[in-house]
Every structure is written in structure tokens, then in C-alpha cells.
Image (tube, rainbow over all chains, first blue to last red):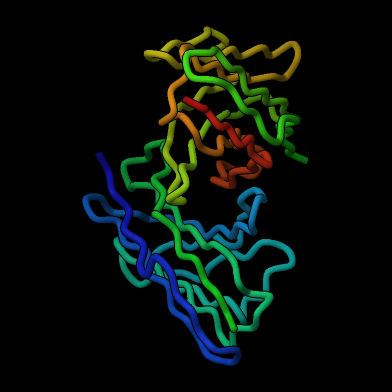
Length: 116
Length: 117
């Protein structure tokens, strides 16, 4: 089955630093990738939708200058948390939809970000 | 606006018991899709099922079954003869079509299922 690889699985960083999270579709091409955020014991909230070769679409309340998304190829999208602060600590998870138009979304394994 | 409600925050059962996870949704779209995902402790989301709004036929997959009732806007999930490995958080999700095919999934808050041996 289709696999989405997300890296790193967890990261601890100091406040003020930037963190990059990668999301790769391993055996299919993804025209669209999605980034979600999940606080402890909470649901997943969509942060942004990224389309290959174009600017990401951010959900209301998500700072695009803080959460930089790049979808430069059909197999890779990156989320960079710039100048991270403790309140950015969360579980980030990506998902991808293949170019064949499948209704099924494939999710990465998630990244636990802890900002000290 | 789309909304998904999973009223059960946590459920605890003993192995081999049957358990039903409730999901109620709200949407004004006539065409929409409903999903269930499993999130084990490791964090990744595992796709379980997708159902479109025109297909009200109930589905069974092994020990899993789903009951889609459009009249009550519910899409409940039942695990028969539960096992310890079923312990996870289960999310119900909805995707509408009013935004020209937007892929935006709206998730419920999840139900944490604990199956005790």
C-alpha cells in the first residue's frame, strides 16, 4: 500500500530556533499534501493545504509566516516552524493524496515537536 | 459549516466485548464523505473506511462494522469481540464537497478505546 514517510519522528529544540519537518510520498506522486496539528488529547486540526508548485493555502488563524510550507516536488512537502516557541509544541502530521485521484488520504507517522 | 461530534471521550472494555463508537455529523452538503481512522499510541493515522453519502449500505470488514444512518446523521463504528490491539484513539471525519472538491477533512475529537485483557 501507499506509504507516506514523515521525518523526524520527534524533535526537541530551543525557543527561537527553526525546525523543518519533511513529508514524503514513497510510492506515489502527491499533488496535494495536508498538514495537521494535534494537541494532547485533542483532535487533528488542518493547518494548511499544499499543492505542488504553488503557494499553500492556510486555514484561518494559522500564521503563514510562522509555518512555512514548501511543496517543491510531487513527492515532498516540508513544514518549517520558524522561531519556534513553547506554544508551538505539538504533534504535527501530514497527509497526501495521490495524483490518480484516490479519495483515500495517506498519513505520515507524525512529528512530536517540543520547544523548550 | 461542517462538524463532527464524537460524544464518547473514553471507553474501556474487557477483551472479547463488543463496543460501538458513536459519530454524529453536520453538513449542508448533499454529497459528502465520511471516514474512520485509528490512531494507535505510536501516533500515525490508519485509514479504516470511507463512505459516501449516497451509499447507506452498512459495511462489515472482519470484526469491524459500520452503521451509516443518514436520517440521524450518524456513522457509528462497532468492533466485535474486541482485542487488546484495538486499543487506540478512533477518529471520525467528514469531507464535504461544497468548496469545489476541497479535501479538507473535519475530524471529531476522537474516542479513546482501551481494551483490557
